[in-house]
Length: 239
Ligand SMILES: [Zn+2]
Image (cartoon, rainbow, N blue to C red; front, side, top):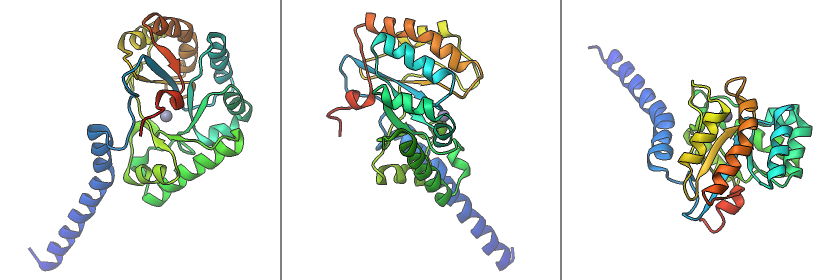
C-alpha cells in the first residue's frame, strides 16, 4: 500500500469515526443510557400527554377542545415553521394553558445535519415558537426522537430540557386506529409516564384518530387512578 493511499484511508476512517460519534454516539447516550434526557417523570400517579409535529390548523383546535372539555392540560412540541403557518392554532395552545416545547424549525432528521445547521434548526424553532405564542419553549424533543451531539448540547444551552417519552401508541410505519391508541396508552401507562401523541404529521389519518381517541384515553387513564398533567407539573421537583 502506498503512503498516500494509507493516509487517504486513514483520513476516511477518521471521518467515519467522527460521523459515527456525532450521530450514533449521541443516540447511544440519549437512547441507551438516557443521560440528560427525560423519558418519564417520578413514580407518582401522574402522566403527561404530549403532542408532536403541530400545530395543525384543523386538528389542533379540535384536540384543544377535547382537552378543555375534559379539563386536561397537555404539552405541545411544535415545529417552528408550522407554528408560523398556523399561528392561530399555536396561539390557542398557549391561551389554553398548555406547555409548549420546541420540535425544531422544519422537522428535518438531525442525523443528516451538520452541527451549525442543527444549531440553526434548534434556535430558529425556539424563536419562531416564542414569536408566535409568546412562550419561550422550556422543552426540546428532536424529530423522531433522535439527537445528534449538536442538538443535545444546544437544547441545554438555551434552557430547554430534553424530553422524549415512555409510552407511544403508534409505530413508525403502522398506523394505529383510535381504538388501538386508546387501548395501548391506557394499558401501557405507568406512574410518571410521558405519552407521545401527534396533532399533525405521521400518517395522514393520525391527527383525526388521535383526536377521536382522546375522550376514551383520558377516561381510561383516570379510571386507572392517574392524574393527567402538563410536563411542568409532571417534572416538578425533578433536577
Ligand atoms: Zn416529530
